[in-house]
Image (cartoon, rainbow, N blue to C red; front, top):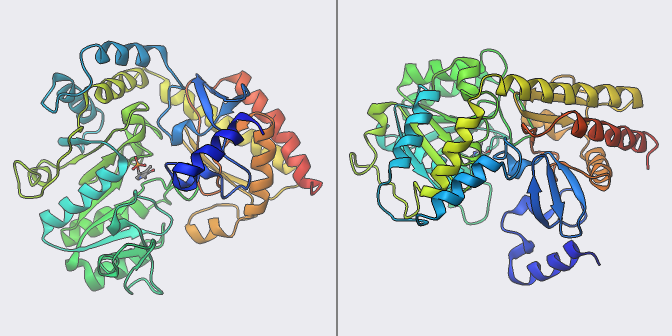
Length: 430
Ligand SMILES: *Cc1c(COP(=O)(O)O)cnc(C)c1O
């Protein structure tokens, strides 16, 4: 038994599945999770002292790579002044101003502790502001684990949603309509019938939780139009895409201004942080100014704010996103050509520093059902071969991958060499 296996056995005695978040348990890829003890730049080191090129990046936040010296130095200095006061600090306003300047749709913002908290609160505000209960979301998008959002589609677009987890009351799920991603006709149809009851739409403007699926031309535009027409609140869930697909997020990249935005991941630089913000008139409905309640003992925590601010300052550097976008694109091109040479049906998606790949002969992946039709068995074989060769990909075919600024030619060459042998193994049916 190696160290990871021993630690996993111990962990399972005291934590459900041995983990604190389900996808970490490796259930989708067989095998057992690896326990890491250290990260530096593009690399992770496990408890058995093996080195991995990391494309998970803590599921998105680590855009600068692990343990960036400036981020670490800033939080060490902040920690010397105390960890939490539960009272206002200057750094909260500093980070708030920085975010408002990078994302102009955010006129006011509230800091929270996770992406889940951000989306849950944004939904409550959309409901409080409009006085309506129904919300629209899209199949394959993930918005954290709050009750209203753990809902799957019923049998038709206009039928009631169904709980996607035990413990979610069906009376909650009934208020959530789940539509097909990249299908504007269906959005128009549903708003035509029920628009005046819909508080808002929540969408991942680039879907990152069904691997990576970009919006088709006209989709986000349609969401903006129907929200304007029916007085519903358009919420861009940019927990993953914010400061990841471009400095200005997906809203900057595609030029659509949402009413509310939710953030997390990169904005905390690896600390537990989230935020929601947007139109001033909507945000003024949040307590203590307004009657929509929302609070948090550790919200705006000075260490977390410091890690976030330092990260944003570093990724604002000119050329930062051009480089990461080019590098990620280059990596996808190499994987595609290696798969083609091996005769493996394969396709990739990429936006900025975020990518997805699919074992499928569908040329363009645009929605959840296409993604579900891809060959997940081939993914599992590929994943395990890559892992054995020291390349750490997300342990599920339904997650995005991430390239950091610390990934360079050395890491891409290692990845390509490993991928070549993984594709060859697949082709030989090993
Ligand atoms: C990760 C994620 C969330 C949830 O954030 P947590 O910090 O895990 O609660 C919400 N929305 C999107 C789009 C995400 O990718």
